[in-house]
Image 1 (cartoon, helix red, strand yellow):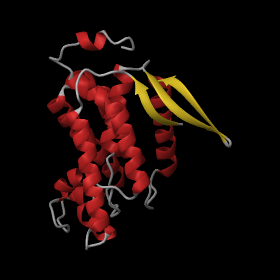
Image 2 (image 1 turned 90 degrees about the vertical axis):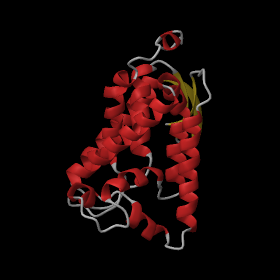
Image 3 (image 1 turned 180 degrees about the vertical axis):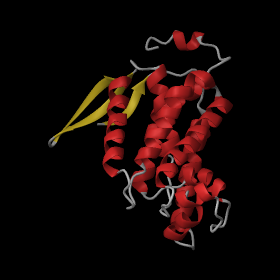
Image 4 (image 1 turned 135 degrees about the vertical axis):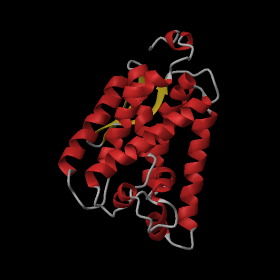
Length: 229
């Protein structure tokens, strides 16, 4: 199930969402072209659980700073493409609800929670975590709570047949988080590299649980006018 757009109009130009996508793409190009090589860049600026928990400084920057640098790094073209697709589809509506600056802080907050959700259960791991998916997961959690019935257009693979369908956000994003939880449970205590499932779960929970707090003081009228709210 791959979403490619939603039917949920916004009232603003999502400058922050566009900016975040641009920064992620620019950083990925830098990673690819860096004289250090991709692997060394990841080791230098990725969020290594053992380092951010112990605050040991065996990287070029402070371990806490890597929590932020890691949010803008990716391991491959499919990694960044998937994250940016989800951010583009769902981020503009959350930016519309929160406003530009508040959305930026919300995004970074979810990314921080996601990083520590991965690091705490793997406090001895020296495998760096990179990717925007933790922060993007927070956006998905917020979207699920605010717009559960918004139509999300998805591609579903039925064997060799591709079927395009419009599904409620609660189905698309509910399916997504269930997959994260299942895979996180299966991979728990694994020391091999791969997907940071608990970062996804932690970021999603942060967005789902706190989005109403971030909305305090905002005008709910424009949200209520949307037929999907």
